Image 1: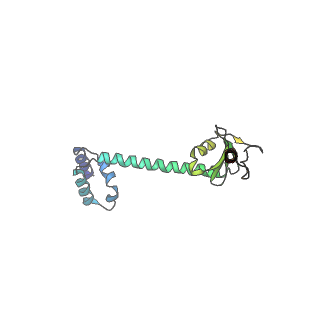
Image 2: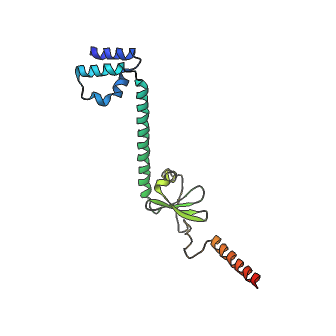
Image 3: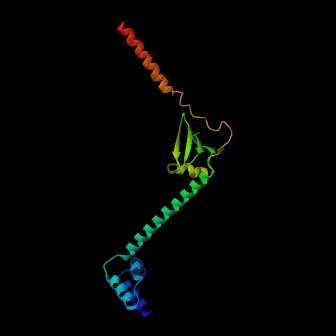
Length: 174
């Protein structure tokens, strides 16, 4: 026990804490016992290292990794919840309809339709999981997208412009 106190005293004289030194060398200390442990810690304490800064950096790194793991778990939980809501339709604050499908949302609104994979829709999943977007029910919940045979208005306009150009060219030739 006196060895422990002498190490603590030596660490304090070196301007560090023994706990920071032990935290820095935790992996290496597992196999050491008795005099070897004392000698190793004593030599580490005498090194010109800022063990407090190292310990703080490691703690920050651990906290960051834990936050990332927690965020990943929350995302997985939201995805699992959303996957159970397949077929449900929701309306966002901009008036777009979001229908839950396999691994993605089908989005209809603002004259467009498309899909957004769950991996790119964290905000939508969070809003749905929190109950911020109302569930839409009824047959008219989602405006069906235009059928592939229907042309978009800009395509029709381009066709009309092309026809007008052709007429002008014919008139200029004659």
